[in-house]
Image 1 (cartoon, rainbow, N blue to C red):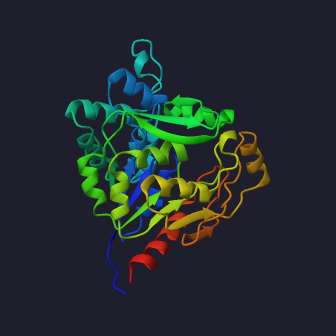
Image 2: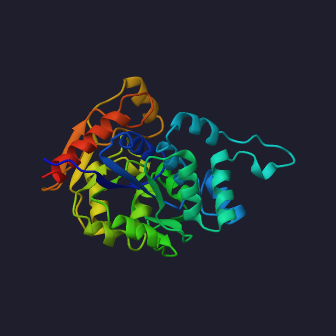
Image 3: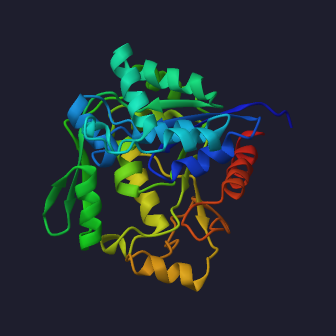
Amino acid sequence: MQLRQINVGCFGGGTGMPSLLGGLKRNPWLQVNAVVTMFDSGGSSGQLRDELGVLPPGDVLRCALALARNEGEARRVLLARLPTLVEHARLGGHTGGNLLLSMMEQYSGNFLAAVDGLRALLGCRGRVWPVSVEPATLCAEYADGAVTRGEVAVDEGHERGHRVTRVWLEPDAHIHPAVNEAIGAFDAAIIGPGSFFTSLMPTLLVHGVAERLRAIRGPIILVANLLTEGRGMSEFTAAEAAAWVGRTIDRPVDVIIANDGSPSDTVLARYRDEHKQRLPLGEVPPGCEVVTGHFWQSDIARHDRRRLSYAVWTVLSRRLFV
């Protein structure tokens, strides 16, 4: 067996993606790329988008920090929120990193150049790619026919118990040409973990992404979430997530990496109070490989970085080193 560096693309955003990136960056045989959603409408990112006319920086920032050479120190500095000062009230509550990335975009006039500058500043062990630089809004339709617009509204729909039946971007967004070229060189793709309808699906809905994913010769891997996401996804499963992805990109998911471990009853009870429960595997279609392990190791619902990275490496090395 001849070892070589594998060029892997990780698709998504939110709080789940850094767990994957932070583990993979330590593998010398992986060239890691994060292809990140750009349709955040809430919090600091949404406010900066609305007030300054910049692209929402939050998901890109979190992924860049996960790949940073000195992640701990970078997170302490760039995720700290500015205090609300009377003379600078509009800056209060924003993270230093979001403001820095927005300032770099305004200075350069190019968001991709700003991301590359941040990556160089942090000494990132990998690339971060905004999937598109075209402004668009995530929209969702529910089983009762109701429609919501914006990432925050879609999340609130889950909490109220509405089941999503369709999601789309409005207006249509197109893949950035540099990202289109980068995906063409990927040996494999990993989707997730992250909020399914607000972090993972928007990335796949961008025009051009599905075509590029279908052309990847290696496996399409879905990292299933640890929990369901509110009342509206109470019956959601990892297999259903794989089916959504397969329909969206018109190519089946090859491998599902799913958690089969459990934290303490106290931790699970806390999440039950938020109407979240362990994500079941469900009925996986024939031909889709399932890799399970105990990935939930703490009191917070986050994948254990080292365990997840080893699982991904096992799948990649077995399927690509032939």
